[in-house]
Length: 313
Image 1 (cartoon, rainbow, N blue to C red):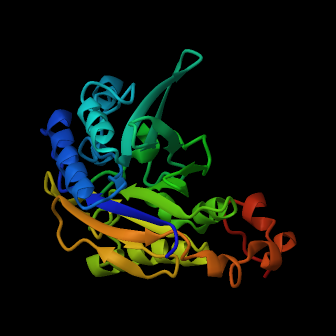
Image 2 (cartoon, rainbow, N blue to C red; image 1 turned 60 degrees about the vertical axis):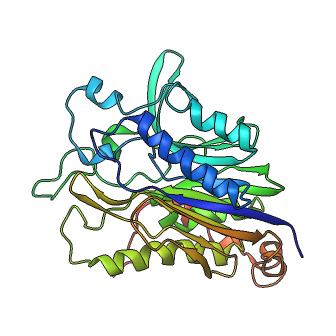
């Protein structure tokens, strides 16, 4: 038997506009305790777990926006979660809106932290691939204003030695981009943990049914897992949030690309798996032996060009 890490994906049901952070944290602590009772050492919570998905609303006042942000982590509202982690000896991943100050300049990021079993923060990630728009989209069913409220992340795709493994983080839309996983794969990542808030309906009303959105959700994570021989733990916010549907579908994916645990509800739900951290080794030594098979001399367009450019015609 290889190295094992029992992990939980702790899906969070709807968090409405009126819900207080303190009440949400009570729910997170309950799921942390449930996961710990089954022997989990790491619990993965969703993106922007502490509040509703506020990017669907348009605010003109910065003060109205900033009420959704955390200027410190932990803080008074989240301290019970950190205390429970230390008490139980269980680590966690948590997504939240981060308000930081660099050289007197306020900056806002869609962030996550990886927290160890001693409740110390091991690492921080700031979302790189921000979806949506800076201004409201005329005729849209709701807004998606992440580009208005957040800066693109400036920390890159790091990995950390933790939980007897090599752990990487990303957030939501990052999971759809192969570069996300490959940059971590090139650092030997063994488990990618990520949270997401994905609506059941597109803001631009394109003809994309919910079942197709669910398929793409899992497809992107399964491909990233297989092509980099890594575990992927994806945790959703789910259900009907102030009348707006969120997809759910939280899952744990093996380095083979197989889903080994899948949420069956759109409520608070804990799913677990005892992950063999050495399962991806044979793929890293064969099909995806990067050192033997990659040909970087042919990949220059990936970093030289952002948008697609058609050949001469």
